[in-house]
Amino acid sequence: MSSVTSNTPTEAAAATPAGDSIDTIFFKVTSPIHKSADPNLFNTFCQKVNSEPEGHHLAIRLIAHKIQSPQEYEALRTLDLLESCVHICGRRFHNEIGKFRFLNEMIKLVSPKYLANHTSEKVKKKVVELMYSWTQTLPGEVKIF
Image 1 (cartoon, rainbow, N blue to C red):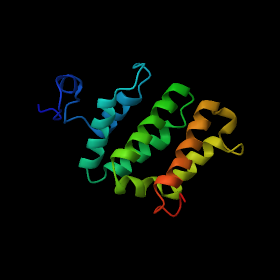
Image 2: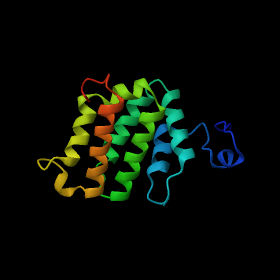
Image 3: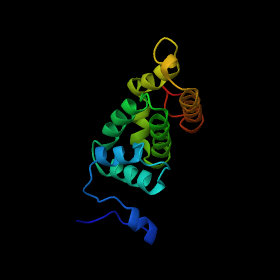
């Protein structure tokens, strides 16, 4: 079984087997079992997303579902992963987050008409911060801007 290539011994030890699916890596990244975020696992997830033809679409579906988790920690970790993906995954990922379907899932978390009453203040704050940052860093995405 081969593993993801890495630059340091620490990365090599923490690498996830290349055969793991996007789903498997995603659930490792967002698992409440791990108390701190593992940047190597975030990078592995992004590499896997970029390496598969439908990776961006699948990643967005998984993220859209998990950001609505009633567990604040899980939702926040997923939003952190989303932020990493925006920085690492590139244009195809940006196109996916720029679709109304995904943007509506984000808006539901802060809208009193939908899930805002069941969403923690930390999660709502992070959603607003991310969406605002996208208006600044992704001006080509008309739906975000």
